[in-house]
Image (cartoon, rainbow, N blue to C red; front, side):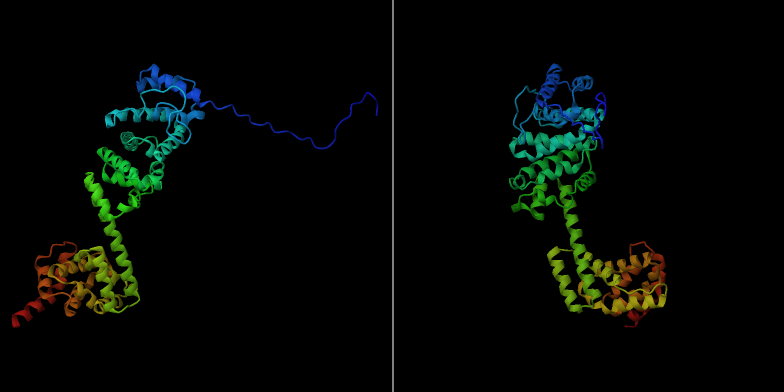
Length: 411
């Protein structure tokens, strides 16, 4: 090698990756700048929004800090709601009056900010979660303001704020046990229902995945259907109480239907099934009319239908009626309940094509098994009020009714 030649390196050349060097975070300077904008505009939220829009503040880096300033007037210490060092302003949500018309402008203001910077929704979620998880650190009046703000935020459909962001943090055991959550959620319900219907509220609760867990907001000592009704009735939320009672009722009906279906499919002893029904009726406080509807549904659902063979279907249905007539008879304890059973049969025959022609035979079978009294059948024939297929069924039942009337005259 000549002394003038430069040595070279052989082999693979390795490239080094440049390291990302993050700029030091300075949320305090950002917070001070936002606070100053509040102060310069004397709390005029419309002017503040315009000033923020024209500023070169780094919202993408300090989104959480911005919402801390909006809610609390300045930065808060990590993990708390205690004020951090730095300037503060007196125009925050917490400093408003605990009234809807005082807090609504703050909701509209934040809506404007989110429309211009939709990426901030995640920062709003973070700060709201932090505030709600720290409810015990607020005064009662401040918690009420947060409840009003939250209700108005959902009423105004605040740029897609997810309901679970609000509701899930509330289920902290220590907050629930102290009754803080129940007070907050009651204020929230009352304010939300000012502008929205109960159906809107239920839809919101479903999206928040707590529609079936409303009792979880109650301290364990008050966590009962009775406690729910008493609390929300006193709060003036009777429609919510009625909705909850209806939901509980539907659950109990479903449970009863499931238990009876199992027994009937397994062809349990009739006396055993009767005892099951009596116990369920006692526990759930079910009305007799609802019981007879369930019994008929369960009995007919267990029929083994055979496709389009009308005769086999008729035989199967009538056999089922005869088999379980003692069960029906045990709960047909008045003319009104018997009449309800006829209406139930009428509806099923009207809605199910394979049963359309079976109506008179089923009624006749129920009469033969002493489930339906003659007076009840004649009452339905002459003055029955359910219009579904009535004329057709009246005509079909006419021969049997004529026979009943003739037999009555002979006696």
